[in-house]
Length: 88
Ligand SMILES: [Zn+2]
Image (cartoon, rainbow, N blue to C red; front, side, top):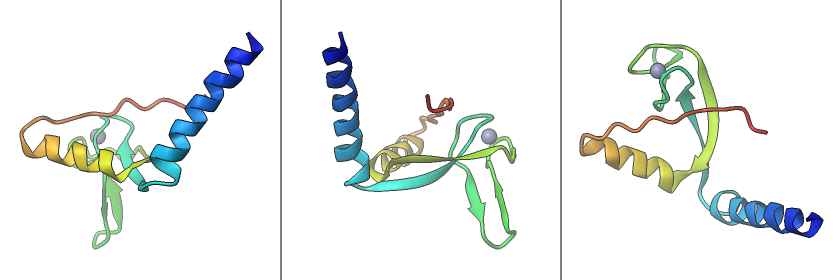
């Protein structure tokens, strides 16, 4: 059983390292209220959600390819939302 735990942890760690850390890792702002990508408005000096205008914003590490996928889905009318939870 301990061996299986090490294998499971190693597989998850390897996937994270190859797909995010040594790849195109980016930190995006996500609204924790509705799950959409938030906007950092440099002119108004305000970080807020474009949909619900909430200021409960979290920084989320993701690959830039995933962010592009979310943007392309929005361009065809599908609005993806992310469910955030604490890292365990
Ligand atoms: Zn929101």
